[in-house]
Image (cartoon, rainbow over all chains, first blue to last red; front, side, top):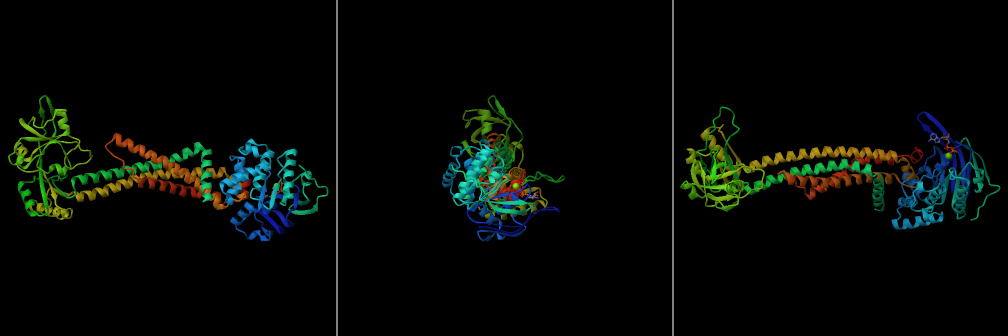
Amino acid sequence: MIRVEKLDKIYKNGVLEVQALFEINLAIQAGEFVAIMGPSGSGKSTLMNILGCLDRSTNGSYRLNGVEVGDLNDNELAEIRNKEIGFIFQTFNLLPRSTALQNVELPMIYAGVRRGERREQAMEALKLVGLGDRWHHRPNELSGGQRQRVAIARALINSPDIVLADEPTGNLDSTSGREIMMILQNLNQQGITVILVTHDEEIASYAQRIVRFRDGEIISDEPVAERTVERE
Amino acid sequence: MNLLLEGARMAWENLWNNKLRSVLTLLGVAIGIGSTVSLLGMGFGFKEEIFREFESVGRNMIMVFPNIFMETGEKLEPLTEADRRSIAAVCRDGIEEIVPFIFGDQAMVRYLKEKTAPQVTGTAPGFLEIQGLKLENGRFLTEADLSTGRKVVVLDWRVKEKLFGRINPVGKMVTLYGEKYQVIGVIEKKISSISFGTDTNGMNLYLPVTTLQRVMKFKDYYGLYITVSSLAETETISKMINGLMAKKYGPKHGFQVFSTEELLKALQIVTGVITALLGMIGGIALLVGGIGIMNIMLVTVMERINEIGIRKAIGAKNTNILWQFITEAVALCLLGGALGTGFGFAVGFFIKKHTPLRLVITPGLVGTAFLFATGVGLFFGAFPAWKAAKMDPIEALRFE
Ligand SMILES: Nc1ncnc2c1ncn2[C@@H]1O[C@H](COP(=O)(O)OP(=O)(O)OP(=O)(O)O)[C@@H](O)[C@H]1O
Ligand SMILES: [Mg+2]
């Protein structure tokens, strides 16, 4: 499903160049649950942004479902972000002035779904993350965990194949973090590929496989020995 | 279509969330559109007024006046009865009627204890039609009045009001130039701001030209109004009269010969220029409003970089973002346009009520105003929207 070969990412700020990724090779099959770990600045977010089609690599190849992403134009990338990938951020990235429902609806607007249908589906998605009664609240009226659940509902609303979560529990306490991980594990059990960045070994243990980074390179890639499996 | 509607809804929500700012910004456009609408309306009103006036007078009229703007040294020549005859003879076919006139000395006219000092004009039948005036009561001067030099007067409504109040003056005797004159008619109020030769805002009193000639010991005329049977002939006849005067008094003769048609053409150019200038003033106000829109849209885009990043991250295309901000700018301008048009109507109403001017605000003008408002939104919204649309999603998301 995801195949990355000899991927480089170089950030250029004027004359200053920072190479964030060095010849990364990585393959992820459909239905996998992968955790990416590594010290700060090791390039995890950089890779996630490229995988999520938010950013482009400098060299190398990224094939998503057999399509070379580097060859796609901005509109085609937007289409992929809209329909095939759901992104979850550490800082939630909800529209502050919109209600939970409106936030969840947003990807459907760009997918061209009609208003009535949108409402219905967004409500449904909010119920699934346990926020059916909070649909009219704005982000600042919700707790961190609740905000992240809204963000998850938004990521899932167009039924993507892949969910990318960059430190989704980074701003949450351990209880809320566990709730989020439970939801992600559930999604994975339904067949969605989940890729997760975390600094927390306990959080990483929800995954099936851990890829470790250091200084822009993969230093290890192995299955999780003792997997945490939460049951509701 | 769906996205179009969504764009409008999102634009509305955002404008609503920033009510005060939106109102202040759209006020700029409102003032621009409002002043354009009212200034152009004023120009159109002026134009229409002139047309109406010419319609009531008839466009096939020629006026022969002594030139009051003569250079020094030239002598003011009166028009003689011989001139009148030769004009009548030369242009016999085209001319319908020649109405001469002279002005009398300023004099008091009295009825019982009331008195007033109107402009006294001696003239002939046909004068009323030429001036576009109507009788309220009685009759106007007739050939019989002229041929015998009868001592009869026609009053305009102001003189009548002053001397007689609500009494019907027809048949009553007034004193003028130390003699008794019988009132034979009253001219009704004319709603107009322009006229030919007489002051419609002043007081007027008319008597047979022959009678006034006798009183003034003056055997000539001040000027002639000539009506021509068809509009097409007006210009040739005007030229013929000019030639006639030149032959008799020399090429630099002190007479002005001009037709209403010529006058109308000249006035059309003048009013066109005035209207264009008024429109330009409005346009400048609109431009200032537009720059205000651009400014506030740039601020909005800067404030919402994160939002742009979020929208792009979840699948908004560049065109979606572009459209979103352009819709917002256009919505602001349309609201401003609506407010401005209302403001224009209010100004028009006020002007109509308190001044003799009139504003003509046509549906076409309102439509154009809205078209312009949209144009301003598109034009001044385009750059900020384009800036928003081309943002890199990652940089936008990271922006603090
Ligand atoms: N836009 C940018 N311009 C320049 N350098 C950048 C940019 N984004 C990231 N970098 C650099 O690239 C390297 C990798 O950054 P990245 O954000 O991928 O790290 P990370 O592994 O996600 O770290 P953290 O765990 O702190 O989130 C860092 O050295 C960082 O300074
Ligand atoms: Mg990171």
